Image (cartoon, rainbow, N blue to C red; front, side):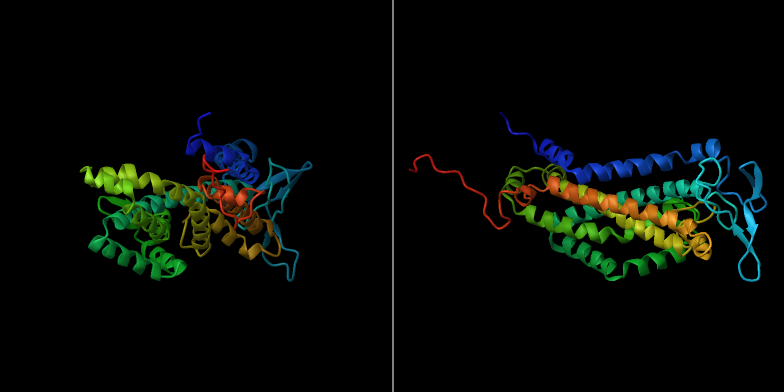
Length: 346
């Protein structure tokens, strides 16, 4: 029987990995729940999660209950939001200090967090992959120039650079040629986060392209007069594509954590939008009275990031041919691969 193609073999190994299937199912459930945020807010919760509702009331067990109740702690000053009712039609996870439905804001915040992490990952993969391939294959002064630029960007602490760029652009936005990113646009934090992680993808891709430049098939293509763009597209890029695929879920998890940190510091997603990081910041003052406001988005971030990391590990094992030696229970990791016996041997 003919041997399966590398793509089919990788897909078969991925489907056989229970952790990959479980993590993909969790990610799909999170994505579908976040996409259903408008339906939940309109037809089930009957609330606008972006409008203050400090004077609102809901009906529980036939009684009208205010969304913000008078505080019963200390001197009795201030107000305490209603706690979780565990009813999807009325403040499932309670309310925040503005009387807004936490469950509805959690779903809308998931939309923003997933969108920013996905766009930032796309920017990182495209720029990092292109710079790595060009620097590794071209060599010489091109490699030296691009490598020094990546090392300068690499030298800055990630969160310090992200905070600095966010503070600079949060007031006036960002202008890139004919394109303008407003300060309240979700594309602005996505661009900043995607830019700062470019060296983390470009450096390993450059090393791989540098090794492929000395391979026999590349020398043969150069000897036949194949144009350089065609060599990069047909000979170099397919060999580094598996590395880029493995980077996608890992970078999404890293970008989500960075976005949540920036939004928690109020320099990421700006009002009226919401993200999981900004919801945690809203619930910080209610941590002792209504902990669900901060814990719910924290749990959502933890589950999503854990699923992305598990999926990234499974993709690495499925796409790496050497993973067969690590996953074979009958062979030691240090045991060499058995060689076929010659036809003339006894």
